[in-house]
Image (cartoon, rainbow, N blue to C red; front, side, top):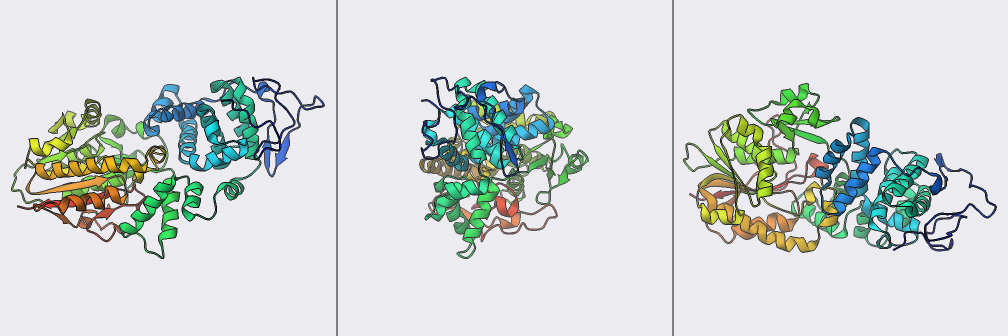
Length: 521
């Protein structure tokens, strides 16, 4: 399908321009008098009107890296995995790396807002625009509306990128759409494209979330006791805003391998929330020796608190040397923390994954722990079968269940666009089966921690309650006392209990859910 905007200037949303098409190539003549259009100004922003054919057919490495990652994400990749590799391969560092990161994540997070703006500027729905060109326009829109990039630079660089990666014929289309977007500021565009009459639809567009996600988060805030009828509207908007904010870089010092002090000497600040955590405000975490060696790692503080809670819960199995199980260990972050926490108490961790590929990721994550002499077992099997294959074997079991990931939208920006309500039914069956298997694998007197990186009620409270009410050998315990901050004080606003629910807009963490089950003796 062609990506040229409507020929008629009177078409709704058609970019205002004196040029006209002369052929299918997308090249344009000058105006009727043969003159090049003069440079125009709008407010304090200058706009370039250089003909696309006269512009560069290239762009800078940072923008090209962002485009490459967006195309990979469209094919199923994950931005948080793809971007570091792309930056490394292209040798992009420092401010350029920061620019590429903001451009990639911002364009991905905010596409739900940018797409209707692009559609209005192009005079056609985004479904009628080639996907690769659409990604280019999303990057351009974010530079104009979400970053401190001068309008003329945003337009010129985006057209140069389009000519390089989308072809010469796309340059004219991208130029016209970008000029039209640049004519209004973000607030004006929001007023134009945000629907009226339906508060959920308005929030979904304004804050770039699918409507079903907005409804699910609203229900979760109320269902977990985080909001009341009086506070829900403000709380929901605060949560949506936090989902679109760049997540801080949280580091974990793996006990016995690294101390928080080593991370602070490298420029990080001690975490206020986790006794093994630190926060890096700027810079590349890979530049820190402890991170490069695997003695420390990037890990959300919420995930750290979950592992600390599993390790701290009291058990009554009578075991002199405990056996711990991470049932769904990949990619291995919580397993590494559990392994180092357990080693100081003579415990042995078994880290399990269902596929060889994910098992290898766990091995790589645990390399430093294994090299230091810690006893860790790593294996590949279906977690749903471990309870039957190894009944009453483990003193502590963590079920970090596969989920929609709605609690980590800051770090996994593409998740909101990939998941649908259809995923909930399939995941719910899996989550229940894994929890049942974990209970079967736990010794009498042992504990099971059930965690998800999602606050969705169908993945959290409902799963645990459904499983427990069908069994006579397990009960739900109050987990809140296990969540202590770096000073050993209770973390506040965890919910009404017995479950724990963390929130990005409250705690600055991913929206981790945690339930603690005790198996009867």
